[in-house]
Amino acid sequence: MTSMIADDERVNFSDRLKSALLASGLPIQPGPFVRAFNLRADGSAVTPHAGRKWLVGESIPTHEKILILANWLGVHAAWLRYGDAENADLPLSTIPEALLSTADLALIKDIVSLPAPTQRLVREIVDAFLRDQRGAELRSGKQGAQQ
Image 1 (tube, rainbow, N blue to C red):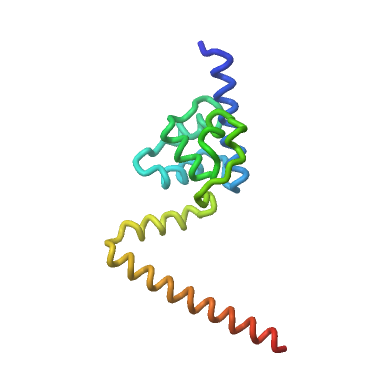
Image 2 (tube, rainbow, N blue to C red):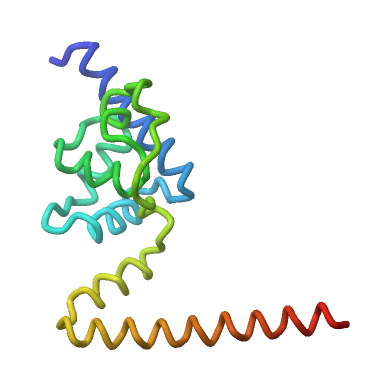
């Protein structure tokens, strides 16, 4: 037998989680949600069943998993867990991982897993492509202004 307060806490957590997912343009289906979460979990992976329980208000994740969710979704852990309005509007110092697609995050993890010299080489290649792209944008902007 569970208390009404505990039931309400689980449902309220679920509502805040779904709200944060929707605000980030992420799916609320357990399968895609859990796959995206597990990419960020770094050893704290969860099953689709556990993710479904969070989404339907049957359970609340551990503090460690709430921190992962909060960082990913760009919200404060206190707000996600408790609905703490005082912390809801504070600016975050990091870019929410929700802005990265699953493929982008997988690419970043792949690059980070490379040896340091290879990572530096990848950085140099990316920098060269960006310089080339910016130069092309500047050239096309000058041509448009001359017309």
